[in-house]
Structure formats: C-alpha cells, structure tokens
Image (tube, rainbow, N blue to C red; front, side, top):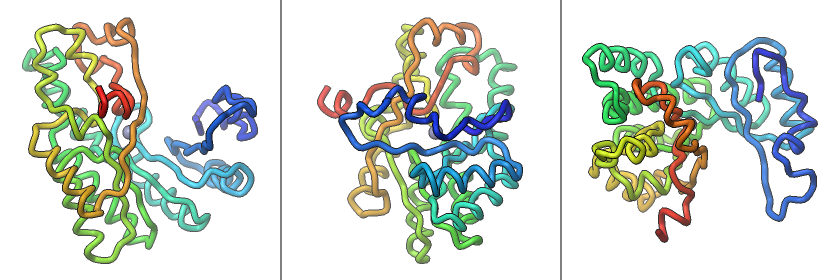
Length: 258
Ligand SMILES: [Zn+2]
C-alpha cells in the first residue's frame, strides 16, 4: 500500500477493499513496507493511530520489485516496536532465489518444475533465522507468515525456547499438498501450483503439523492470492514469469474439505 509512486491515502483503504461499510465480518488490514524513508515512518504512525492497522508485512523475497532488504527490516521493525505494531515477514532470501532462477534458466530449465528448485527449503530457513535474529536484537516481536519448511519451524522453535516473542503461521495448502504437483505433465495444472513459498516434499508437512501441535506455530491461514490461467500463461517459456503471489491455490475450507 505504501508505494514509491506516492503514499496511498489511508482513509481510502475501506474503499480500495470495496467494503464501503457493508462488510458482514470483522476485518483489518496489514500493510506492506516495500521501501523506506521518513514519510513511510510517519505514515506507519498514522495507520496505527488513526486506522487500526497493527501489523506490517515485509517481503524478504522478490528482488528488484518489493523486496525489503536488511536496512529496511531494521528501520521498520524498530518503528513497529515504537508503535506497538507487529512486524511480519515473508521469509525467503530474495538474493538466493534470484541467483538460483538465473542458474536454472541458463541450464534450460524453464518449466514450473524449476520453481521449487529455485526456492529450496534453506532459502526459507536462512530468511526466517535472519528476520528472527534482527527482531530479537531489537527486542521486537515477529510473526512469520506462511511458514512452509521444517527449516523455518526449527528456527521459530529455537527462538521461542530462548524466550523470544516469535510467532508462526502455516497455510492449509502446505499442510496437505506436496511438491509432486510440479511434476504434472499438464503445464496449466503445474503452473497453477506455482506460488511462493512453493509446495514442499512431504517431510516438511509433518514438521508443520508438529509445529501446530507443539504450539510453536500459532495460526493456520490462507493468503488467497490467486491468478487465472491467462495470467499464468505469461510464464509459458520462463517459470520466473509465472505470477506467483503467495500461497494462492485454494482457500482453506476447499483444501481441508475438498
Ligand atoms: Zn508472502
């Protein structure tokens, strides 16, 4: 919502969401911090004090687009702490993802099966560890959205054992679907499952279930950020161009009951 093209006027949030006072459920917004300067610091205060925003999201992936680098994480986490808001992170190392993507493309791997190879579990584990350690150094709490790997669950569990206020969420899809979907010979079906973080080998699912059972993960959720087949087709010859908003395959009820 806070974009280099100019800050969105916070008062228009409800209109942007098309809610216009007609929502039949409770709702709240969390706002992505995708760049940094004093105006962003200022607006975060306005959002918290006047518009009920109490969490901010940081994308550690998506290099060249919305990636929050360490300097931004430090500034923003500190500001969140000041405001009593909770910082959240999409934990994947964007530099590594970019490097792996270029390498795979150079090897001629252009299909959806290359997507999970470009974002292996340690890419998430590294980012989770970094975000948690930045937050705990600052004394800030932190919430990791869509945790998909044992690597990240282990980092969360370790930090919680040390007494740090670290919270984790996992998505219904990651609990039930594994990475075999990327081997589908139908390009459209494989591409439909391209999301970030990707689906994982089965062992990671067990770690997520155990994370929920042990209380190291607190939330089961869905990001619901879907793309239609026409949009996915943009990546026909290059898997890095397949739109892959986080975790947008199906919503929670459809996955659990489907
Ligand atoms: Zn995300």
